[in-house]
Amino acid sequence: MDFKRRIEEMLAAHTNVLENLPRRELIRLSVERKEALVSANGALVTWTPPESTGRSPQDTYIVRRPESEENIDWDSPNNIPMDPETFDMILEDALAVFPRKPSIFVTDRFLIADPAYAYPVRTITDRALTALFTDNMFRPRVPEADHSIFANRGFTLLVLPYDKLVRERYRGRLRNLPDGRTSNMAVAMDFDRSLGVVYGSAYCGSVKKLMFTVLNYVLPPEGILPLHCSANEGPEGDIALLLGLSGTGKTTLSADPRRALLGDDEHSWSDHGVANFENGCYAKLINLRKEKEPEIWNAVFHEAPYLEHGAIVENTMMYPDGTFDVDDDRLTPNSRASYPLSFLSNIKDPPVGGHPRTILFLTADANGVLPPVAKLTPEQAMLWFLMGYTSKLAGTETGIIDPVSTFSRFFGSPFMPRNPDVYARMLGERMRRYGTEVYLVNTGWSGGPFGVGERMDIQVTRAIVHAALSGRLRDVPCDEDPRFHVLIPRSCPEVPSEILYPKNTWTDKAAYEQRANKLAAEFSAHFDKAYGGKNIDPEVARQCPGK
Figure 1 (tube, rainbow, N blue to C red):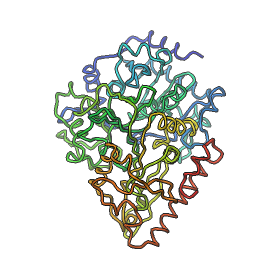
Figure 2: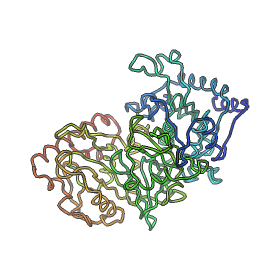
Figure 3: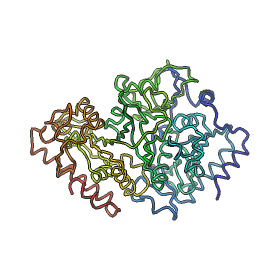
Figure 4: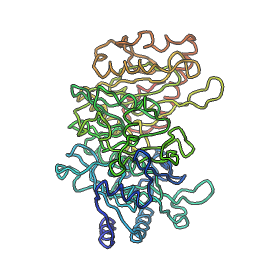
């Protein structure tokens, strides 16, 4: 069934389709239609229902079709299959709902700043605020994009944030909630027909992350590696990529006043070089501090007439006088703000650059056993890319608390649908082809685990990052750690040599060995569970700690 044709027929029949409205008009209508309030500083503020304060991974689906199912890692818990019939039912319901809406908003935007690979996205929604979100986050059309390799195969996305699916109609087709009812929400994508739908999720991030997942599927066959990372450029045009999970310091370390920011979240690495997917940022606000993150703070909280502002502040506590309390997490710890990249002061425009000279994998090892910096061979880098390791703390009770090891493949596992060997192999190929250096940087603990040791000093970490990005670590002699299979530099400018080898910083050497062996065993167990039977290069598998 040609749903794209039917969608266009539905739009042609509607009496009030508002296509590609100017930004000021989207802001005005968002306020006029009471989809958002205006804060004291001029930013727009919105609050979503409790079930929509974040992504809903269990309600996120990929349509499973015979022609493409072998491309997707269905063993991953993040890739939940949906049968084509159910997806078509959701589209039918959406096509029945849209004609009853007083207005329909359409935005035609692109993803990927390199016009040769610009990916068209047509978003259709009943909410002015959702359309404004795509204006913040997706890129405007440029004439060169007409010649993109994707020019004739763009994506159509239907978004009905506040409508709900009829539970009885989808019993046995969508997931069951803990209370026994059927979910009335679905975020679903059909890669084969370039169609997606967000039905019942008012969280703006559902739109962003659905399209990120789509690009992570469509880019690899074109020889383009998608990466969940930040990117910046030095004064000599040298590009650096920073990958890391929440709490590892990715945002802080990528905001370097000496380097221009390409973007903070999603990039492509093609034969042309690196390009930001997006036009904006979707930043966490909880516990944000002006002195620590001045760029984000000023982007969101600068004062401007509301028609000239357009930042969207989502699920943050606001008082009656229009001021914010970013420390109040009663609504959610996942409060967010969406704003264009142009709200930042030190950006690269357009956000494209050459091939990365340096890549940093950031981890916050709360075990205190990983070195503060290690150089990785292509095979080692592919392994650590596959693992996406960091650690989180189990709680805050009195005494030493065992950290919880967290593994998220490619530092963004929910959004990487293809079989894992595809992304890992592409990283290794590009490292070799372009001479890219990859370093593992531990922003976690030294001298012992959490509760005993100390968090790595941020100034030490900044010195390590500067040394890596400036090339001053490139020719430093290294020693291989036989347990974790990484190369530890014997020296690093402006960093005390004694802390480079983590065992040296522990008073109890036996305790270090025990803790290090425990973490290595966790790596080995996770690798076997996640990648056993997968087509992983044996030389890469041998780089796994504990192997």
